[in-house]
Length: 294
Image 1 (tube, rainbow, N blue to C red):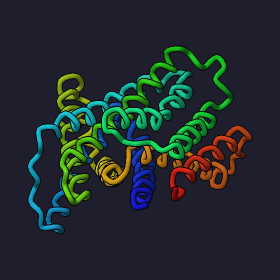
Image 2 (cartoon, rainbow, N blue to C red):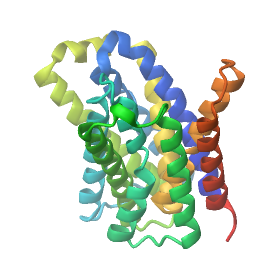
Image 3 (cartoon, rainbow, N blue to C red):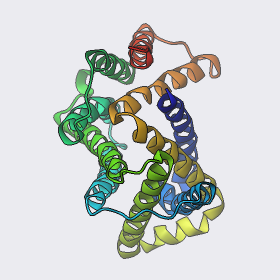
């Protein structure tokens, strides 16, 4: 059950990082705030790797040729998934697209079976479907109605599929190293993935919008903490990927929706609707089935 602990830590760190990125959006714009997680995250990932190497006394392992296709798929599909999600942020239909993005665990289970041979037990399949349905119920505030356009549905499903491919790509990269130490395998993959993403987006901004790149560098103080939290979250996501299927990890991660509902209810004193309560119940049942020994 160590993977569950890693996943919950990663989800909490990601929630904190998202909050910091939202604060940066006002000054850096959406693309700039998104790039912060990569540009300021990769130095911390390299520090984590150095720490693991020092603690274990191991040398950097040789990278097999098959590692590169996996990690490149993971890095670039994550960027593409984020871009497709952001493309509908300003639209009225975004909430619907976001609900479909949260079908990611279903995509992950399917891709994991096809590309990695990750087996999904009937228990796990039911858990994935229940938790995903719960998130969709919570997200579709007021029902699909007129908001559900073909475009928003397609973009949401594509984004969820891309996030799913990213998880599979990174898990495939970790497994391809075939290292006895899963911590080193996960940390090494995190570092390489973040370096690829930071270099790619920095080059893109340097060519397309250098002002944003300069603004990111100018906002280094608040960006530094966001970058650290991003790298910290990635480290624990990858540790979880190293020891269980990506479908298990991404399904358990949906529990953050329950945390958000709790904050809304008890901190902000906003009532929970029957629909939201039903969604939370489905997520809780799904997660409980997932982590229950069977």
